[in-house]
Image: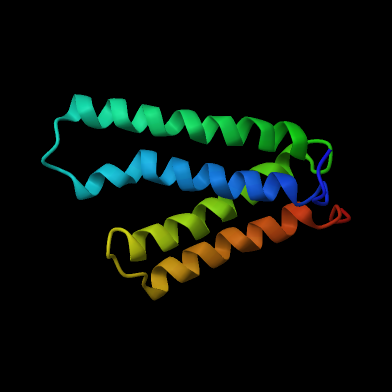
Length: 119
């Protein structure tokens, strides 16, 4: 049992999972001089911890959210973590194009969480 509301636990686990995932997938871009095999081994090692959070997030979250809700929630969390990572770790800039694209994805989330649209 946890003291946190059941709807919040999967969100926090997904945030942690996505931080690991983003470093596993993109962290090596700062170290292009490293051998590819080393990069793959390190990335897989980091991804292990991502899975240790993602699997329970989805298992616990499925008691509160539908599978589609969990998936789109994960995508928005991924975008937020990735945006911060791009700016603060890789030193890249976010442009208006990025914000428009991210906004369209968030619009999709709205429709997944919204009650069924009458036909």
